[in-house]
Length: 427
View 1: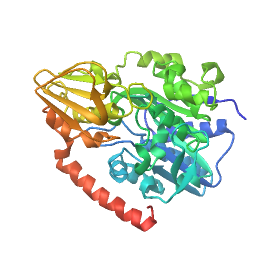
View 2 (view 1 turned 180 degrees about the vertical axis):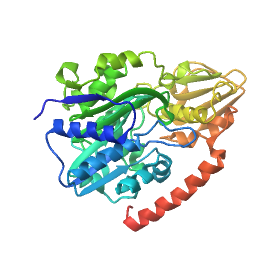
View 3 (view 1 turned 45 degrees about the vertical axis):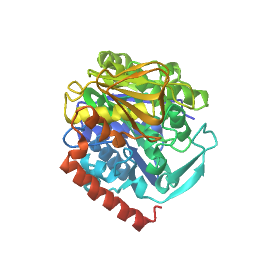
C-alpha cells in the first residue's frame, strides 16, 4: 500500500486547462486508473445565486475531473449528491450550476434521494449502525470525493470526512446529528471511504459553511487517503489535527495516523505558507457567543453524552442565523433583544424585555428565566429550515420564507424530486 500523501498544487483560478493538468498529476501519483463505474461526490450542501456562491465545490473543477476520466477511457461516470437537509437537492444543483456543467460534459448529475438504495450494516459504527446506501455508492467501483475546504460551525473543518454527511438520504440525515455528530461522521467513513480525494481549496469558505464567505487560497488538494487529506486541511486552517474531533475519533478507530509526519506532502505549496495566509480569518459562527447581535445565547448540554449539543439545535440556530444574515447583511446586528436557549442549561437566563426562545424537545432551564415572554419550538432533531420562520420573526429579522423566487424554486424542485422518486422506485 502507498504511504498516505497529499498533493498541494497552486492554481490562480478555475481555468479548465490548468485544473485538468493538476488532476492528471494526481492520477499519476495515485498509480492507478479507474476502469469501470466511477462516482464523483462533490459538496453541494447549499447554493443560492444571490447570496451563497462559495459553499460548494466549483463545478469547473468537477468538470475537469470528468474530462480526465473520459480521456482515460472510463466508460461510466456519475456525479451524486444529497444536499442540505429539508431542501430539494435539485434546487441546489441548479443554483450551483451543476446541471449546466453536467450537460456540457455529458455526465449525469443525480440526487441520491431520487436513487434506489439498499440497507447496509456498519460494523465499526458507534451510533449509525445501519445506513440506507444509495445504489450509486453501493455499486461504484471507484469513488472520488471532491470536498470544498471550509471552516465549520460545529466540527472545526469540513473536508474529506465531513463530506460523508452528504452520502445520507434525507430520511436519515438528522439521525445522531446532535452531541454525537463527530462520532456519526466517522461511522459513515465505513461506507464513504473514497479511493481519491480532490479538494477545492482555490477559494475556501468561512463564517457559516452553507453561506460561506470567500477567501482566496489558490490551491487544489489531492490525496489517496481521507484521513491524510484532513490532517493537512486541518493544519492549513490553523488547527492541530488532534483538535479536530472527528479526525481524532477516526484515528482512534484505526482509520490512520493523524501525526503530520505520517503524511507525505507534495507539490509547490507549503502547509506553513498556507496556514500563514489563513491565520487572521475569523469564522464567527464557530463561537456563537462572538456574534455581533443583541440576541443572547445559552448553550446547554445534550441528553446523550453530557457535552454541549453542538450538532443539534444549536447547529440549526447557527444555520438559520447564518442564512438570514447572508441574505440580508446586518440583520443580526439589528435584531430585537432576547435570548435563545438550547439543550439542558444549568443556570439563569436573562432575555431582558425580549423573548426567551427555547428550541428543541429536551431543552430546559434549571435556573430562572427573565423575559417578557417565553416561547418553545418543539422537535428533535431540528433543522435550520424549520427555524427560518420562527427565529427571524421572533427577533425582528427578515425571513427567507418570504422570498418568492426561492419559494417558487423550492416548490417546483420538490415536485420534480417526487416525480423522479416515483420513476426510479426510490421509496
